[in-house]
Amino acid sequence: MKTIIILGGGVGGIVTANELRKKIGKEHKIIVVDKEQKHLFASSLLWVMNGTRKQKLISRQLSTLNKKGIEFVNGNIERFDPVNKEVTVNGNILKGDYFVVALGAEISDSMDINNKGYNIYTPEGSEGLNKALSQFKSGKVVVLVSSLPFKCPAAPYEAALLINSLLLKKGITPDIELYSPEVGPMGVAGKKLSAMLRGIVEERGIKYFPEHQAATVGDKSIKFNNEVSTAYDILAYIPKHQCPKVIKDTELVDESGWVKITNRNTLETKFAGVFAIGDITNIPLAQGKPLPKAGVFAHYQAQTVANNIALEITGKGTLKQFNGDGMCFIELGDSKAGFAKGNFYAEPLPTIKMFMPGFHWHVGKILFEKIFLSKWF
Ligand SMILES: Cc1cc2nc3c(=O)[nH]c(=O)nc-3n(C[C@H](O)[C@H](O)[C@H](O)COP(=O)(O)OP(=O)(O)OC[C@H]3O[C@@H](n4cnc5c(N)ncnc54)[C@H](O)[C@@H]3O)c2cc1C
Figure: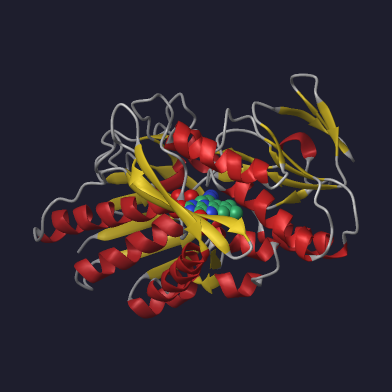
């Protein structure tokens, strides 16, 4: 009998647990550990922000996994020892034969922005922003990427476009500025897609300021490292991301500050039987930038790792490889979305295709949300 312990019940953790359960017998134990009681489908937070979703519609109780024969342990992971393969959760030690580290990226309140703006990467921040926008009469909205890296490269651009569309519907002429330390939108996906998305943002009158790293955020103003400053009436921000503290000080992490993968196709770490997937990893690409932090990669990596652990345990099946494929819906407002897909491991540059935006991609994104939440819970 083997015990597989999955650290994190986010996108990567949920998919790994479900896929494994299908592939190995009930004599083997699958445990998912998460400090939260609920899984939150983060992609839909942008719809909480524009008022088309309520938080409870996009969350699922992790305890429902128990019905499928997946044990859910609700608790804070305080220590992980990849050498002895044990994890401490709320003071209790759990021992496993295999570990999948899927703890995502931790968000922190750098620059003390918390009480000045809305963190659109949390349900509270998205709900708060929605309320503020519904009461908004006039003024400037600033969307700020506070630092790099951040998950979901499209999200700040989608947020600005959705806010734009919401204000227009309210009969307000939008005054929106978008600041980011990036050179351009979704840079890893290539110059063409980046220019296309920038064009879509700017043709709607959103003022875009790339290569702007915020230095200080005041009550109604932001100062950037290049001496530029701007005032705002509403601030919507993407918070600083970091490797979760419990993993940061382990030998799993390299100089990038994130978990090092020794084989990007199988997601192995340097510790036998310990895999890492999703936002917590750093996977350098040929162009020098890392694989973006996105749910689609956590999802595909989870399927790979689950398959390969099951293969090791049962001896049945064939080895699966994560080959860098990814896709992304990009919400543009007015019930329209764009869609891009391609291969991020392609060399020398990722090969990504962007499809003509339209209503059908917006529907595709809604369908994806529904399928994800019903399939895995
Ligand atoms: C607004 C927004 C929009 C997005 N849109 C998209 C999109 O359209 N497409 C896309 O591909 N991606 C999107 N993403 C990104 C996507 O949500 C993440 O990339 C994905 O969730 C990463 O999966 P993961 O399993 O690595 O981590 P997560 O899903 O973040 O899961 C990590 C889990 O670990 C738990 N955890 C962390 N530390 C501990 C601890 N010490 N003890 C116990 N539990 C712990 C957390 O509670 C969490 O449940 C979006 C994200 C946001 C915020």
